[in-house]
Length: 75
Image (tube, rainbow, N blue to C red; front, side):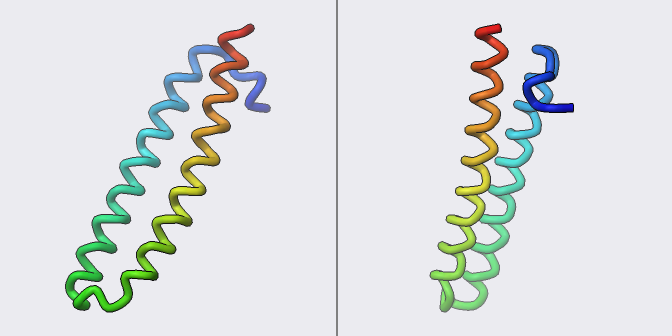
């Protein structure tokens, strides 16, 4: 099934999926922060790279969702 074939009732499910992705991202960040703190924050740059990687991925999915939502609203 293509994204454009989704009906409006599917949009809340997609929103929940993105919210879960965001909460998973937060857990990854918190785990990395705790791990780095135990290592005296000696490799903070790796954490920054990890954050950027997840942020880009999340923004890509969020943009797809917003375009789909706009398409469905315009009918």
